[in-house]
Image (cartoon, rainbow, N blue to C red; front, side, top):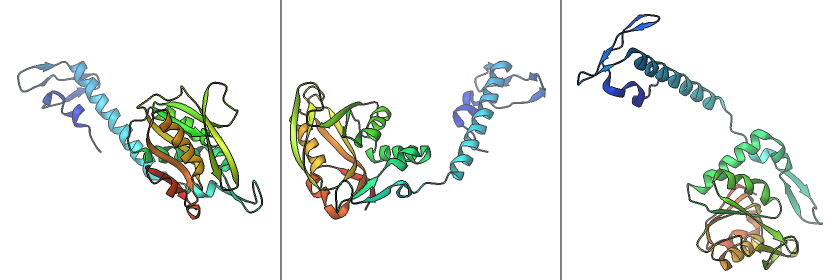
Length: 236
């Protein structure tokens, strides 16, 4: 069984002889210090408990089966308009194991960067955007469609794969120099994400990464984001 050096080697204890169920000899450290039997028993029990925990954790980890997140994406043709294929993430959201794995993999893509704010794009970017912010100990900023935010805003128009729209962000939501993670469920033409990046930079934010659950590579949206670190979990 694996042992923890910081516990088993503490004080460089040389001997441990159990005399009975309730008695333990003093153990002698190199400089002649005596470790009381109660202290040593505590360390012994703690080390044993730690070994059991580690062993259990390893066994469970090895028994876990990685889910294929694509199995939880439902493909809907001709939505929201004729000729458009919509990737529905609601089955993923409804499955606790799949959604937990998804957030973990999205966090791994951030690769340890310090993040001050996560900007989630309306509206499906809010689902995992809020969770990313919580796990990263960061604030969350919603980028919403025009007219949805109540305070003073900046506005940026953009081209969708099926029309035109505009996004807004509160003027006081991002401070100059803050490190920003942009998140949305899908990277399609790249117009939405680029509009958000423009808004962030107008407020002085520094974009660390554009982070997506899915990417429709045939629409080449990554080209609009080539100046940024853009990553996606699933590619279609």
